[in-house]
Amino acid sequence: MADVLNRPPAQQSTAELVQHASEQISRLVRDELTLARMELAEKGKHAGVGAGLLGGGGVVALFGLGTLIAAVVLLLALAMPAWVAALIVAVALFAVAGVLALAGKKQVTQAVPPMPTAAADGVRADVQTVSDAVRARRRT
Image (cartoon, rainbow, N blue to C red):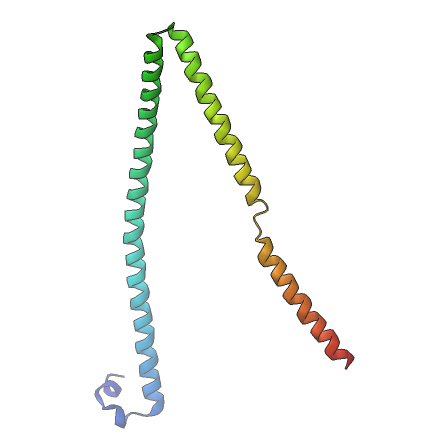
């Protein structure tokens, strides 16, 4: 094989040239796949770290929100008994949660069914058109 590679292309047969090209293409594809795999692994690593940092930020923000809610309770407790202040804040939070849940439910019901109905209707119409054309052609 080394002898074939040492000869100039003009002295090689077509079969030898095709075999040589095939081997080079195979090596190139393997090398490109290896490079892509390494690049995806690196990007996956960065994505994992980023997702972890985002999750950590979300947890800290949740603690911050809890602290802010406690501050609102303490602020109201200056004007009324602490238990009344806590009850008022709890009722307000449940009201916000209810509004968000209703809005979320509305969004979910708009997403169901998950099948793209407009695209499916278009495909059905296309199939019907082709079927009608085939039937019409058989009649003639």
